[in-house]
Length: 276
Image 1: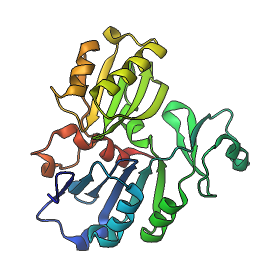
Image 2: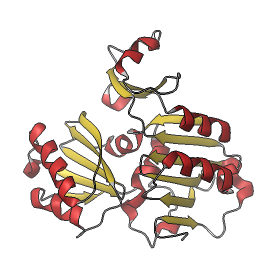
Image 3: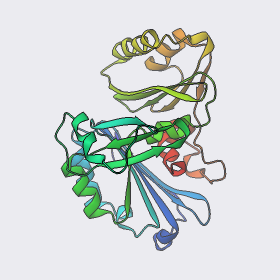
């Protein structure tokens, strides 16, 4: 434990020389940064790092990539889900891969000049996004063969097998991602920053009212930095009878290093491993 906002868990038997067999997963949000290392040959979770309440995620990321010995290893595969305000979802029947530049008109915030695409076949759309130039340059220069994903890839990884009405809420210490699934279709997805449980309650009611969600017919699935009894959980419990914590979607992966942690804390981070 580095300080109250940082945690590093490493399997004592992890040999950095086996990095060529490992996948590195990174989740970069406006207020937090986390990563996980999974050995694909032994199907074992080797390391998890999490830093919450970052004042400047771009600087935190740049410093971490320079100083963290694990991040400099030659991994077999690297997947990074990165938050950006410039992201749109195009239904597959309207998506034109031959003319991506026309989608620039939908972006209002200046970003880098590179457009990235990510298909979400399970939900019938393709995400198009661009990143802040500093963040993009930092990742690309420090991590070879890094595959960039839309920031909602994590929560949609948890949502893929939800066939009925489900509201999926993924929390950091000061924000949450929400996705509403009904009859196997993605109806809504958005990111919110919150200062307290009262503000969270406001956004939750806004989501319920705007989408006409019936809590008695909907299951709330929770992941990230939330636990039963905390103020945000109590807000959810006022409206939902069915509340489940989302477990990491890696059924065949040894996750013993998380035995002393709530299993749902890193579900969305680990869900990156099942993203295409």
